Image (cartoon, rainbow, N blue to C red):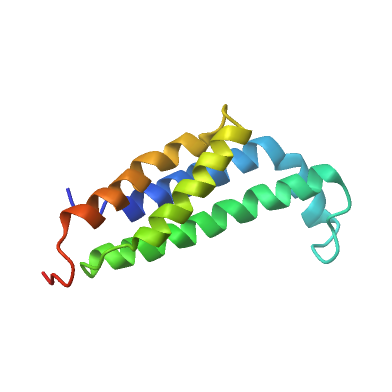
Length: 122
């Protein structure tokens, strides 16, 4: 199966963003109603904003990985390692969370790094 890692990461990001709207819907409505500029004034609104922004950044990472896969380029081991460290930290700090969903993509990145010969072009 080809080109699945970036799509998986985007799927996780969409799930993250949908979860954000479920958990913080009221906070988002308050932020929008009050105008977005300098609107983060409480711990709840801070959490809501970081939750949403992390989902967006994760989606962008998924798009980048998907583009690499589409062009038959390898995701670097350093990106895989960074995602592994971030995900492991997230799982340790919040074991009951969606961080676990990143492990299949991370393992896919490492598998691709070891199964493709260096400088191989397809």
